[in-house]
Length: 256
Ligand code: 2AL
Image 1: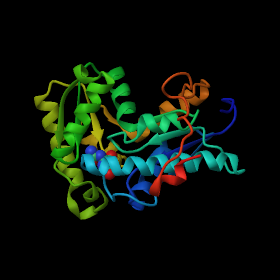
Image 2: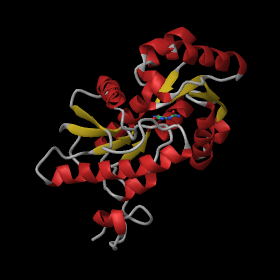
Image 3: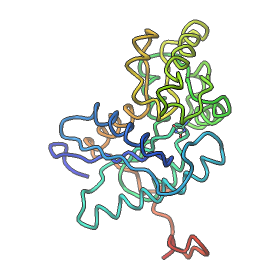
């Protein structure tokens, strides 16, 4: 990691393979980054075009790990070293495995958003895409210890790729669900539950009149803080680099 006086490089990994969403995530991250922060955005070469099931998430995690390995190689191949990674899907797919592969900080957008929401409110609700993905956010809230801060995980019933389609009325449906959360949940803030919502924060905040915590931007600012403080992923204990071993079949490239 570099000194805080230097520039830093944050790599945003969109775990799905939709390039337009990756570009949007990159723009949203760059907008909030400090003057000295370079933001780059990538997605895996292979995997689901959107992540809206446990199956999609499991497959996408392998792509995330490939992207971390690629980022680490760039640093040693004379390219721009990556100082921190953000996993820009609200299920935080592959988060702990990704941390095992690097000394840089790795931050999931769900955990980043939950952390920031607890700093500005005592209770928040999450507004995500499809109802079937609510359980993914609920499991994360439990695993991360945030369940008692969250009143409700709500769905706007939007397929993820509708967020890429101007004609799909996604914004209006998200705003409607956020307004219902404000009226019914007794909350102080709303967390947006999809990386593909990263460009909608300002409009939603204005329409709903509550603090809106969006994960990509939250994670970029947390990543900057960790790099500035020279805090990287601990290599003491379970997040140490994985033990070298043979991988068989189509995973033989992972072996040593
Ligand atoms: C997501 C997300 O953030 N990106 C994606 O493809 N699926 N999560 C979600 N709940 O829809």
